[in-house]
Image 1 (cartoon, rainbow, N blue to C red):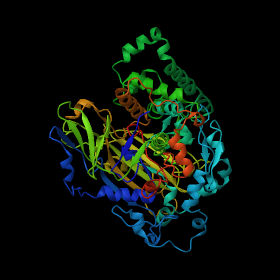
Image 2 (tube, rainbow, N blue to C red; image 1 turned 135 degrees about the horizontal axis):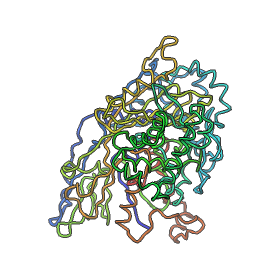
Image 3 (cartoon, rainbow, N blue to C red; image 1 turned 30 degrees about the vertical axis):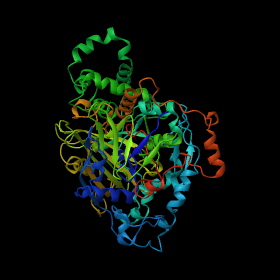
Image 4 (cartoon, rainbow, N blue to C red; image 1 turned 90 degrees about the horizontal axis):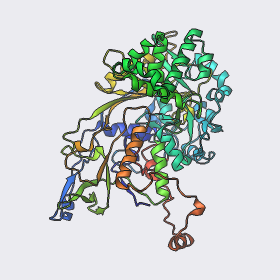
Length: 626
């Protein structure tokens, strides 16, 4: 029931939650490697400020991304003569993507592999014409397997391993000799990539899934199960049994270990139901770390490693016993709802989630403006409340409440704020870190700290059926809290798991996947900052953070709900929308439709985003959420 205007100085939606095609990511890299400051061309907007008003200036340049380094390890065979397949001709402008500058004309002749790939327009229509998005009802979230570049809907409970069976014979052959992917092929099929700036998974019983179901926003998205949980132990990658069936079918564990593991997992599920029985345990372990607690449970070293790094996924040194038990229980409670692991991944990338909320908001009148910067907040001196904003056109826009992303706040407002940083890496590889009969695997792997005091690294590997990368490649995301630059934090892990050599001799590191392309960058983590840390903010201005370091999205959902309840304490947060047949239209709207001048907000503003960001995505009303 509220009127929402979303303005963003960027030329793509979602901020640091966005997804990009490969050429869009190259453009984003170039933009963030430039250190030029944006200066005000005119100060005419100051004439709009009255005597009883003061201004809070906002940042003109996003400073949340630092230390961006990109590397190409693949064969750069005449990449300057290649352009993205299906790319539309665009008028040159500031911030033109690097991929656009690579070539003036597409190659007329392609290899059989290249010529078999449909154009980007066909790919866009393929997604639009695919089967209905996932239902909001539990158990009806759809998995998509797009092998051979086509989408096949399956029931959500169907095993992801079964989805890969038709390709098993092909993968066995290709496992020994992976297809050679060149940089020119990556550029040509750049629109097949949907590369997230932030890497996350959705817990199947997490706050975001419940919100998607409750609000019926899930109608705009489709999901795929994460198919396996991996562990890195003694220099090798191995699969972790996490469900009851996996435990008893596992060949890695002895029968004694299986019983020990099941007994401990049962304890983690039920520890709150028997407070008297477990009270003595908590008295002894309340001050100990979860890793120390696991040692007291007489678990084998391998079981301790699996539980700590692959099930609870917590820090070995900083997580206390209660936090570890809660994390383990959350993992176990999410098992079996939509698949054999607790996690879901949205097709076309994490950047789809904010777009889903945007679409719902746009249907009910939300307005979105890209490339539209705001100069300042206008504050009334007497009341201390924000009255309006002044945009770069010199217009005053009045509102009752203002939600500002942290990156827009100036240094004078954030002088007392202490930010954390995330180290991120995105790799394009030619093989999976753990090869199996099925090539279509979505895997999560936690690599323990290399040195004492270093953070663990979360690795998420995505296959082509997630619609985030081209066929015969994998998209790998690495994330950890920063201690140094992203490259310094993550390159040791990359070297352990992958081969960085462009050419390897026969037998040399044959078991390791080869990195074709990589980018490292540091991202600001502004989550968890107390409002009082910001200096001089009016009471009706609310600050939303960017992505946090957690694997799930609970922090963003909680923050969005908290801000909404502070603004509208009597209203429900993200209620289910009415059915279309129940909506009563005003007579003016009906007349507009009949005359052909329909300004319905259902028309999706996709064109501007297609120029620079991921595939045909739209904006996000819940910028505070995602």
